[in-house]
Image (cartoon, rainbow, N blue to C red; front, side, top):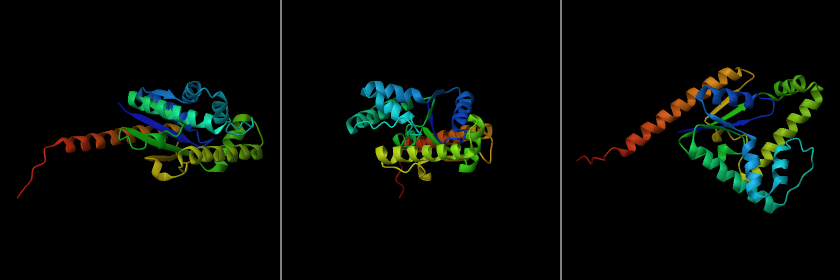
Length: 204
């Protein structure tokens, strides 16, 4: 049993990479289901809306109590998903919550801001300047989320086992790299457990 967490920048094609990884591995893909389930458990639907509202269009400001309950619910759900295994978890600070688990691979999907803005502009038929504003707002939202609730830097490379740049490789290649990295990680962690279980012989 294993899991993959996938952090991504807006316009990086991270969700597409996550879908391809899930398809290749036969894993379940989990994204906004975590947000909705956590909101129900915490009784805080406004937090879910604020979390989804990456561009800050709704102007929501949930209470600290509601946010704390929601974050705790997210932690429990993400941990339960990882324990169940065979899952790709997109976002929701999985790279922080599950950072100490040897059976989980943490991936970040990135691309230069100008590449991401161009993709957003073409996808939604909007001006490049408007797409750039969306990129900046989304990056700020994700950066603030991790800093506020987990005291971590979203762009900290030590949170990830693999960082892929979709300006340089295709989503399909990124998915292939992710699957290969997961297989290597599981093999290494399995070898480590086997060595730990070997009897210790004290030699003179």
